[in-house]
Every structure is written in C-alpha cells, then in structure tokens.
Image 1 (cartoon, rainbow over the protein chains, first blue to last red):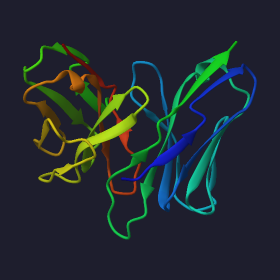
Image 2 (spheres, helix red, strand yellow):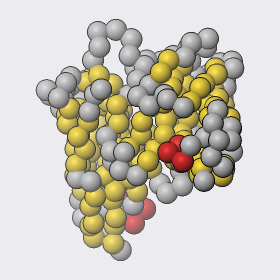
Image 3 (tube, rainbow over the protein chains, first blue to last red):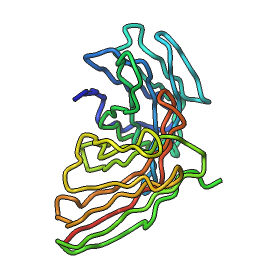
Image 4 (cartoon, helix red, strand yellow):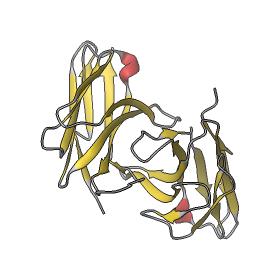
Length: 114
Length: 112
C-alpha cells in the first residue's frame, strides 16, 4: 500500500526554538493533514491542506502542501512545553475517484525542555 | 459536544475471549473508521464504512469483524482475541471523502 515517510522520528528541543518536520510520498496526494496526539488521547486535527502550494497557519503552526503534491511540512514557531506530543502527517492519495482512506506517517515525537 | 465516543477506554482479555469495541459519533458523519496504533507503526486501518450499510477491509483486517449498526455507530469485534491484538484502537469519522477524520480517545486493549 501507500507509504508516507515522516521525519524526523523524534526531536528534543529547548523552549522557544522553532521546529520543522515533513512528510514525503512516492505518489501524488490530493489532501494533506497534520494531527497532534497527546498521551492517552486520540489524534487532533491541526491543519488541513487541499491545494498544491497551499500555505496555512494555525497560531504558531504553519503547514504547506508541496508543489509536487508529494510532500508537506509543518513548522512550529517559538515552541512551548505544551507542544510536547506526537505529530502525524496524513494524506489522501489521488485516485481519480472517491477515496475514503487516509495514509498516515509514523509520527514525530516532540519533546520540549523548559 | 462529544464528537467521537469510544467504549470501553481500557480492557484486559485472556487469549481466546471475544469482545466488541463500541464507537458512536454525534456529528452526522457518513464515514467511519477503525484503526489500531502500535509503537513505531503509526495508525493502521482495520476496517472502514464509507456510508451506512457498507463496510470494507483496510490494511490489517484479519481477526476482526465490524458492524455499521446505524449512521451513528460502528462497532469492532474480536471473535477470538490473540496477544498480537494487544494495541490501542481508535475510531474516527468524517463527513465526506475529502474531509478530515475526527478521532475518539481510544480503547487500550491488552490480551494476555
């Protein structure tokens, strides 16, 4: 099946630093989503992207849909301790028709040192 | 404002026991999904229901069955639990085929 390569697998940063993570695919996607998962909870949607080149912000978070439609990145500016968690990318492969399934990356574990 | 509700939150089973995990959404969503999450594996799709009355296999369906009881509810059944099915199970729903999925808080299942 489809594979998404998410990197890095983990990051340890100091409070106040900026963070960048990305996902790449070998095939074209028509939707990119970024989720955050806190311990003991389900993933929560952060940002949804629907067009190649689209750049969308949600507070200190910014995500972009790559122009090749095969990648996406998420930036977090001025990190704070509550940014700790696992960040997942997810994408919907282009299929030419209805596609109800998402493909998920394996996640980036973010640790923020106060 | 419940969203997606999963029950139970925790469960311990013995090998060979059966169990049904329940999921309900109050967002009038058409599509519902069951995933399992294992360390280092991300989220893997078990089964999904694109609309009421339909179900389809995902990436890892073996050992599971599902029922889309109505538009709100989508249950996952383990007929004969195995230790390899120890995992965290998430239910999700979406309003349409190009819309984000919304997740429940998960069921943590241990099989001894």
